[in-house]
Length: 98
Image (tube, rainbow, N blue to C red; front, side):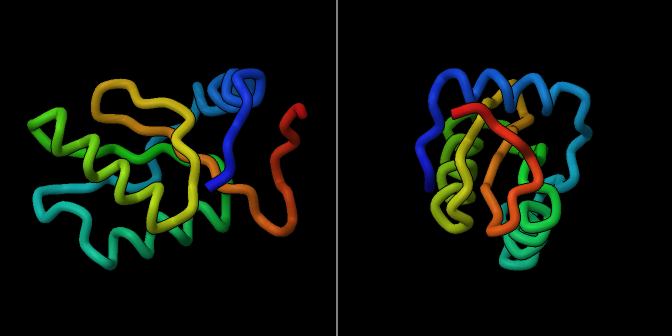
């Protein structure tokens, strides 16, 4: 997982503002198929939103930590049940400041 600077996080947050969630984690939690869908979406888009449907805040945080660890993505922000993730691809699609 790459560490993003505050400037980069602000830029990515502004880009993600209009995004809709591409993956929704439902009642069954973070299954292998959901994790593969997140990886695929990150490979395609680099910047995605994921909706985590878990009642408990700690449970949501654990799922998000598991996602970032298993995908190598960086958490840009979390607002309520929504988390924004970024993972740089070999062929950069999003220009981010240094």
